[in-house]
Image (tube, rainbow, N blue to C red):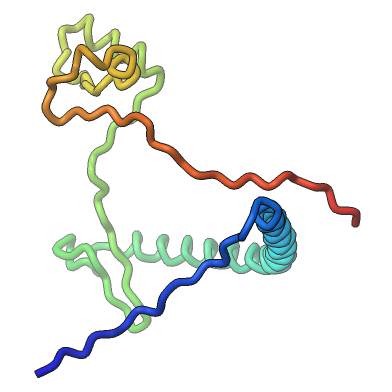
Length: 173
């Protein structure tokens, strides 16, 4: 049996033949990049127009939903015992949908975190203060010889990126 193998097409790139051709290609990259920027700006302008058009239509509908929701909630709260079989259920079913009463999990909020931390320390409640340990990468880069034998630690040097930066030319409108 022979296996059907898909052959990948060879990728061909236009390679400039000399320095002048390379300069022309860099110029082309700049021109194409500016065309993309112009198209993106036009697209964003059109999106803004569409957004403005529909935002005005959403507002009255959202206000009406909020009003109807408030009425449904008032009705359901007034009839909660009947709807939940005296609290045995957290969901009430209607022909067109359900309503639910859900208890949110406890949460903590703190204003003036530094003052709260100091207050916890003064009451001996350090167990409620988290200390985060993390690598000081800047210090490691300043003293690479000191950490040379540490397993799992690698210092990357000499990584080179190739960047093409076409000169920006202002085009006359």
